[in-house]
Each structure stands twice: as structure tokens, then as C-alpha cells.
Amino acid sequence: PFCRLECKHQILGPFIGSFPHIMLRFQKRTTLACSASTLYHWHMLPDAFQTLTPPWEKVSVVSRPETLRNGVKIKLQLCVGPLRISWVALHENFVEGRRFDDVQLSGPFRKWHHSHLFEPVSEDSSIMHDSITFEIPGGRLLNRLASPIVNRRLEKMFHYRHQQLVSIFGETS
Image (cartoon, rainbow, N blue to C red; front, side, top):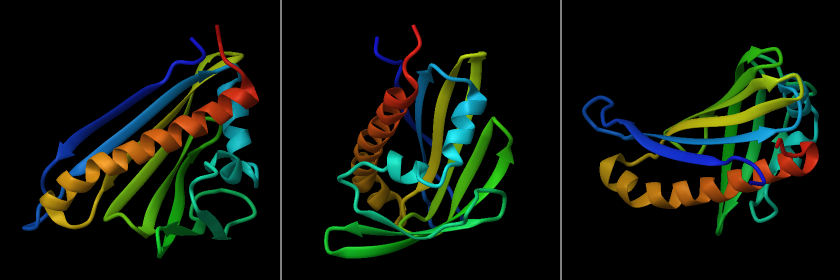
């Protein structure tokens, strides 16, 4: 196969206070022909986000740090139909060569936590593992209606992102 791809979505728990929300999870894994350290450091490059953003996604970077590290924020503007949505994410949980997370501070989701995990397989291969947990605002009904749409959008977006990584780093045999 060209690369190993897995998508998983699961409900983690239907509770938050008296207005229940559903925590959802999306995951994608791809095995690449580069070390985990190489893959991690590539993600630190200033143009990595733009390279991984699909051309059909109308996202612009409003402000970003010169370097990614714990505690820095990135501000994005999304265009969804006629709507312009501001998204602010905090970067945290950096482990050199292995992982970092971005957590939504404000934006379209009730909660959003994206872990970028770089798992070593050998000296010259690794697994890119994106793990996202999120809540859609509006309670159970909106979650049931919107989660299939959000999942399809994430599947399409992360398929593109991981194919970009395969085109840069190659596949493992």
C-alpha cells in the first residue's frame, strides 16, 4: 500500500454539567520514511502549516509566532460560507522530537485539543499520529446532526495533510 492510513472516531463521554455535550475523537496515522525527529522538526518550520492546509480550506494566518514552543498562540481566520470565524490556539506539551499539542482558546468548537505525535519505528521511519478530541457547541442534538459533517471534513482534510507528508518524506515498505 501507498501508506497506512487509519481514521477512528468515537464518543468519549456524554456529560459536562447540566447541559450534556459529547466529546468526539478523530485520529489519523501514517507511516513515513523519515525519523520521528525529522518529522517533528519539519512541523516546526514557518511554512509547515500552509503546506498542510488543503487548497479548498479557506484559512488565513492572522498572527503566528516566529517559532513554536510552549505557551505561544496562533491566530487564524476561517471562512465557512459567508461566515468569518476567528480561531485562537495555544501550543503546549512540547516534547522535543516526539510531540506537541494545540488547544483552542477561542473558535468554532466548544473544545478542541489536537495532539501531533511523532512515533519512531526505526532510525529512518516513523508514524505521524494526529489525535483530536473535540466538542461541538449546542448539546446532544446539534452534536448528532453536525458530528458526521465534521468527521467527513476532518477525514478529507487529514487525508490531504498526510498525503502531503508522504509526498515530502516518502512511504515505508
